[in-house]
Amino acid sequence: MDVFAYVGVQRGKTIKGTIDASNLSRARAQLREKRVKIKKIKQQKTKTNSGLNMNIKWGIFGSVPKKEILMFTKKLSTMIRAGLPIIDSFIMIADQTKNKNMKQAINEMVIDISEGRSLSMAFKKQGRHFDNIYVNMIEAGEVSGQLDKFIDKLTDILEKQAKIRSGIKSAMFYPITILLVTMSVLMFMMTKVVPTFQEMYGDMGLTLPGPTQVIVNISDWVTTPANIGAVIGSVIGLLFFHKIMKKYVGVYHRTWCWLLLHIPLFGNIIVKAVVARSSLLMASLFTAGVSVLDTLEIAESVTTNILFVNAFSRIRKNIMSGIELSILFGDEKIFPSALSQLIAVGERTGNMEEMLNAIAQYYEEEFNSIVEGLSTIIEPIMIVFIGAVVGAMVIALYLPILSAGDLAGG
Image (cartoon, rainbow, N blue to C red; front, side, top):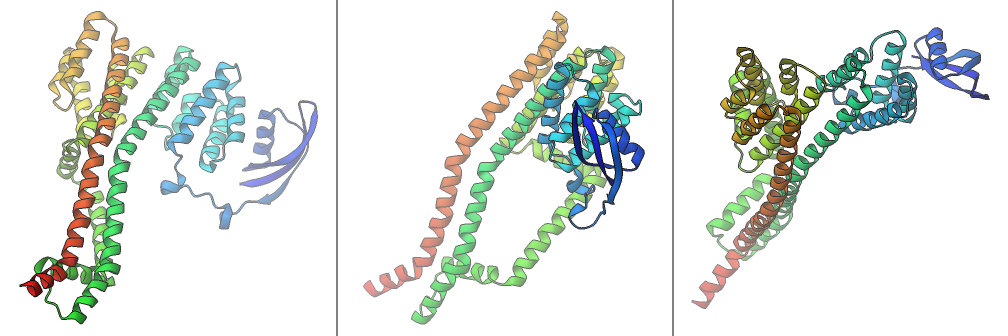
């Protein structure tokens, strides 16, 4: 990318600045889109992809956070409802965006739209950041001529999905934090406290009881750097093995997904979250006039759990045989039985969109209730667990002294 310095007039005022573009004509085009009347423009310098100027596009470094996508959609919704043209809206949002990857994606979409591509096509080209759900909602809005309404619906979907993700994180945060604190306390005791007691008992010439000897042996093992290195290496190896097996071995992937759904308490959270998200999405797509087949195909993307993906795929294939949607969902045991019953009500009343919205709200409330209940249950369990572990270790460390006292008393 080259950097061009320019002087121009915008809204009656003389302005100067710089703009990034691949060539001079592209720089002029971008300034015209910003309603700048160019007086003078020249190339200033060439950006290099070294040092601090490097814009990394690969891996997680090239991705855009979900939060940025939500903020972009909210701003776009507000500007379109205010009557601003799409290109002007994009340019204004890009100027307000600090995330470099997001800013670049918006600028590339501005160029695509300026060259005559449709809005949905511009989003589709940025498929790394905007998924099938997003692109299909934009396309439905374009086709129906109600882009503002569909972007509003898209904002609602993204907000509720963010709320569900936040709920899952909050449910996991407390036990993980407690576990990390417990591990830190144990490591401190094993590396600092236990060696002190071991040295003291050695000077006293005391014979260590079994529980104390076990703790001393663990401390010796933990304080050996080679052993810690072996553990870290094993963990990294297992994670790599898991990733490879999950990607290339179907049986392993299905088994792993099955185990996730059958973890006590947490598995239920995953099911409720998937059902809430898919119901909300299907309600919005039905409103858009998207066919049932396309709706079910898009619904597959709400989760990466292969069991849910396969269930949606089977429903999509069998719907062509004329079987009612409620029956197909009822045949898939991975979905709660209440889901098929509620869909059946929507089919009988003819208000499928309204019923799916009600289903999404129902399972979202169920999800929130489970998350809150989980926090309430886990807190006392983790406190008792920490107390038991630390207490057992303290008793084991003082056991030689207590034993020596008993022998002296005897």
